[in-house]
Length: 472
Length: 166
Image 1 (tube, rainbow over the protein chains, first blue to last red):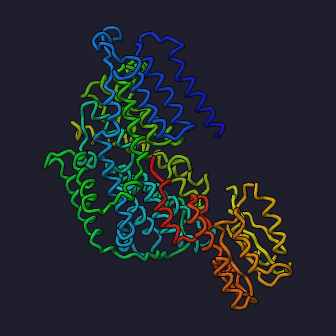
Image 2: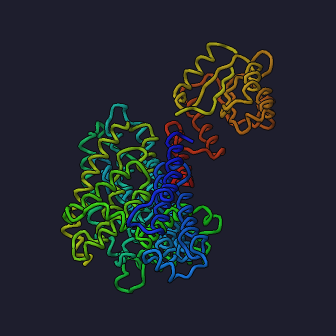
Image 3: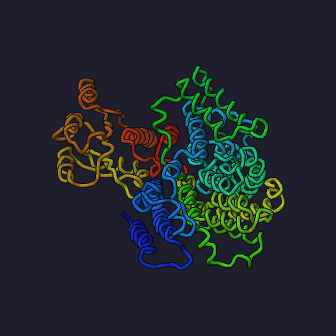
């Protein structure tokens, strides 16, 4: 275990024990229990003494044990008695806590994961890349835009990391032929992770923090549909992409004049591939037309999950390789939010600061900024999870008519974390770019900071002028 | 990165050994490259470090050497547990057909490069062999991205289940 990890272990355990040793006024007994879980989870997630998905599972286990009617603390007690004794808390349903593992948002992401893995299995991603890159020609400036557009498009429904890995290998052979002094190599290498992270904001399934946003907003009373998310996020993604392209190009001018990327792939014409294309197209169609047919995108996700299995397009060996631990990571985050809400821990935490001093827009900006800031040093999903309960509670207390409503605040945090691209540890796509050996940390930090600042400005602008009206 | 795997070069003529080590310099950032003048000195090294943490990824072997020939050595290496999975290359102008067949069938030879060689052909061969090694050992390809064969790297990264969003 590294020093940071050991520190995380110690702080996590200490944090867990703290509420048992110190009594906080205004915080109920269940609130203290939830605080124990929160502190343990926060330190374990941030410093990773154990894998982050394992911490999420701990969160669920501790919730069942400490806060549910099935656990040793409240088990066997009359719920009304508990309600009276502990400030309006009813012991949680253990089934509901464990059920976060199959929360509708999780099902949505499972559908997305299956489509994405099937896309890779049938070379769909590589063929789409080859076809879409053609119109962009061979001039460096346009190739850069082409790469970013394709990367963004793919990462909107595939994992940002897988998209980055695939696109990086498209440019690696060419990069090795470029003269060593050519700064454009840096632009090429950075464009992929940046575009992947930005593209991941375009749809609810693009990136795991988005799941935290949707789940939190739904609990606060506003379920963001697939189409509604896209109508808000897509314009921002397009503007951010263009700004980042322009920025990277200006900061890293090419000396080469011609870029030819070799891509030897052909469309897979097997029966199973065609079935996949059909299921993919149908699912996408159903997702974006949600406001017409009214079936939630979460349940539409059962369509690809079911039919990819029915036609054996995805077989058990494929199913086993799905990133289940990412689903569990999100589930634990959702569970923690539930505990903090049910025990009024978030109310207590929010009450520690006087928020009436800040205007709605300032609060929006603060959460976008803090989300972006801390997410540079930890997993995006973890950053979103830790900030979300506070934001939702503040949003609910501000009242729905205000600009700092729960949905907008959730979006500030969730999308803010996606804009965190300053360091190699900020996101796995950044780490992949670093591994090529072409990018120095200072290159990444400079460009990443610029993109982050652009991101905050865009988030606040879009919220105030466009999104608030779309939500209401 | 901190190299964890070895490239072992065996060649009895010092000038030739120097040339090989020089041509393999691009891989120094990711692998520890060791040169030996005879098969026996390699055997001593491997048995001494069998308790150590360094594993050979690739053997680049001359054939005509005093003591154990390259082919016999590569066949021998099969018995070293430490060297299981390592890739084997013969770099020689003097292995006859019978010996080469023996190297392929019993020594599981992976590559035959004839002397004299060009730096590019040696580097390309080594790149392919190291990529195969990393693939077969199911190692995380990310730290090795600078030295791997880009074409295979695509498949490795796309199929690598360790790389997920978080």
